[in-house]
Length: 215
Image (cartoon, rainbow, N blue to C red; front, side, top):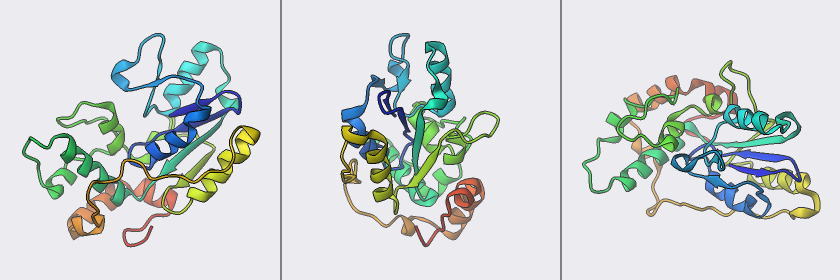
């Protein structure tokens, strides 16, 4: 997440949606200390993958008007996103025996409540549907604009440049946190896995216009 009070922008960082690249782009205009979830305390209340309704609560306590900020998020093809999350889990637990991708897909929880054997907040939010992430507990979307990271990077950069005015000229979005070895996420899926993801993440697929074989 990044917060710029001067230009009244909040970027919400959904895990595995190119968020590290966008956060890097916004570093120069960020005006709040953003910590990891275990590091939050009374002084540092904002963490990397914080949801909009959580930020709204902090803003309210501080007397800041959440509604006056332009709120942005990025999204990604749900099948690609889950494949990327699985690859990250494997990298982070390289000394442990990993379940197969198909077995792991059977455990995913788009509500974000279950963390399996990995209690980190980023993991729960990585499994959470993107629609759920940016919605209030009542189901209302809490961001003003969503950009598909696959094909709307230029539009995202133009929007940030327009919102910041003279503070930030339009820049390219550099891909950060790439996989160590290139892979085709489509080849990871059996038909059963593909259909399970389509069922579990139907809200993201419908809301953001994704298809398995196309971005």
